[in-house]
Image 1 (cartoon, rainbow, N blue to C red):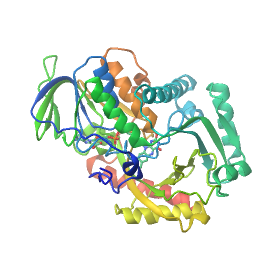
Image 2: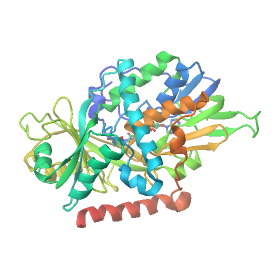
Image 3: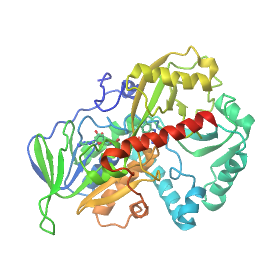
Length: 434
Ligand SMILES: Cc1cc2nc3c(=O)[nH]c(=O)nc-3n(C[C@H](O)[C@H](O)[C@H](O)COP(=O)(O)OP(=O)(O)OC[C@H]3O[C@@H](n4cnc5c(N)ncnc54)[C@H](O)[C@@H]3O)c2cc1C
């Protein structure tokens, strides 16, 4: 099954080629009534299904394609720390208490994910370390402060400042001016996690269906007697509660989700093993840079460079993706000009306007969760688990996210995509010019 091509994202990923045996799940065949129905088989949906089933709730999950065909099986694998923004920046907007609560929640997310993998015997190729680096001079003060603030105000002593020399040594390129190195996090093989998660959800008793697209979600009537109905071509799910976990792939299914979470194409290439280039990230950490169109790269366990970048208007042809990423690799690592690119692929990152997750009850009994804005590897797994806790009536850290003010993208259904592309192109241009 190593040649499976996701119908909704370009290119066969290196993850697909190296994931090994993966189970296929049946399509829904006939109608069912369950306590909770979930639409979307990425980390968010599968974690919710797994945890609901573990607590004895009857749960059915439908995925339009194969599990992981969206972002969860194809991402950069970087777990990160905290939220998408540095805590000191969130603090300016939300105050210390809320920023600290969001930081602590992300730490819980990190612990949860590593424990989950251990408990369920999921070998997800974890490698420690992540570095954030500045592509412009003059930012030493901010990066140094980031490490200090993390230790002193956020009880997180794992980040250290890197000056230009150390940054060059640890990355194997002179392209960056300074950075921070976080040894309290790491990076993973995202599809190995996804496949293990689906197995765990099935073993817990969740009813899992692939190749089953939800075509409509509606309530039969408002009020306590009303039911939620999810239509598919091969049957109807009737339920009291539903989770929309479609993230950037929501399409026309649910309008509030579509108005708040926009898809942005992001692309990754995997090189041949870099055995002749020991200077490239010798410590094996992941890297994310400070560009608006972030370049994120890391070594795999078998010593390849997995290099991600984003082209807002990129063609969806994997050959063009390989060429575009090759240029970025060579700009960063000139010595790799002849390196072979073995795989190139892409996927849609779900972003929100303030780049913070979207958690909202979009109609009575129906919650939508997504929009992790490129920071969802650990958060989406945890949010799925927290959704299950919420259904069980527990107070959860999901409330911290639900309290965030996430406005809809401007422009309405017709204009929001062109307006967003215009804005992104402007910021991407700034990366190149300044
Ligand atoms: C190229 C790329 C690189 C990334 N790199 C990183 C990274 O390094 N670190 C990080 O933290 N985050 C990263 N992300 C983001 C991260 O992958 C996501 O935040 C996370 O996987 C979101 O999971 P999810 O389950 O919410 O959504 P998804 O995994 O996108 O799943 C949504 C699913 O819903 C299904 N669906 C949609 N509509 C329907 C329907 N009508 N019926 C049934 N099913 C439907 C889709 O087919 C899809 O499988 C990256 C994303 C991409 C694309």
